[in-house]
Length: 145
Image (cartoon, rainbow, N blue to C red; front, side):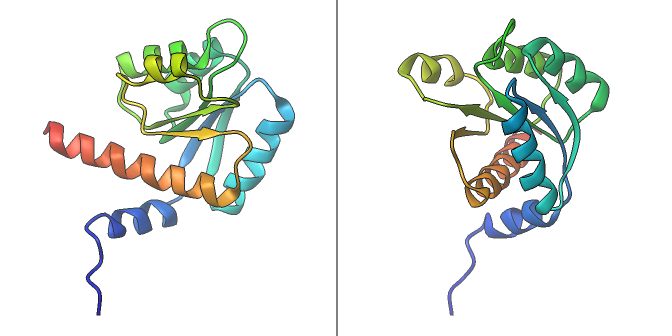
């Protein structure tokens, strides 16, 4: 009989909880695909943003449990938007990108970004990234107390 790893109960709880999610991506077809995947996982999309400026505003007004943030958006990019959001409140953010460049890693490395997904990704990869983000966020919040 194997002993469950300490984080497995958190992952199971994150996977079973219905989260309110903000999607920030400038590609409507990709946003629609994400909405379908998230709904099938039992989550609720509370808002969608097409650029970083909208993401900042909606993060404040809609109070999501989690943000899925694309990097390459017009105006304020996703990394800058994430920095501005995290400066005001602590919440899990998953960065989404088409390519993960060294420059991107250098920018997000020091930030409290809980996970990163590279397009294209599967529903299972999204589910794992959400679970990991929730675990990391809960763990960081517990350690800060």
